[in-house]
Length: 135
Image (cartoon, rainbow, N blue to C red; front, side, top):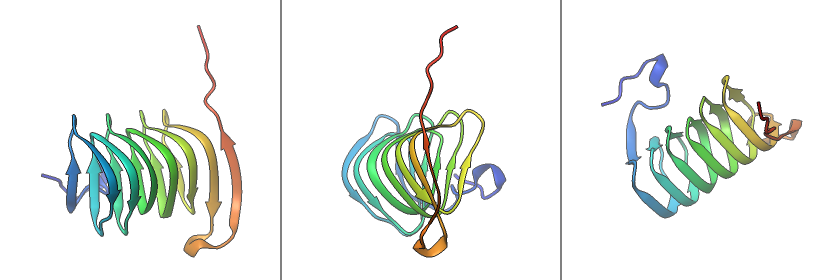
């Protein structure tokens, strides 16, 4: 179902999947990769990769190694390795990570704290807010 190559980075070895039209509430933990294309509310605490696919909506406190977002995440994200935001993805809330990648078209609305690896003191803190424009 998933092939390990550059286009699907983080999607190989998926151990869990929340499909479109599904909504799960509660606490989620895992050690590999989970993909959410539906909805999730609650808390995610994992050693592994969380993939929020296009159309996916996560409203949670998220603590993972890596998160890849092409859907929407609302809340706190603490990633020990990296946060990757790809179009048309949107993060609303607070991000704490040593490595933040925002592709063209990705939207980060909130606060970001860049940390050194292994939870050391913050290096850079920035605030991002979406600007509404009309044509």
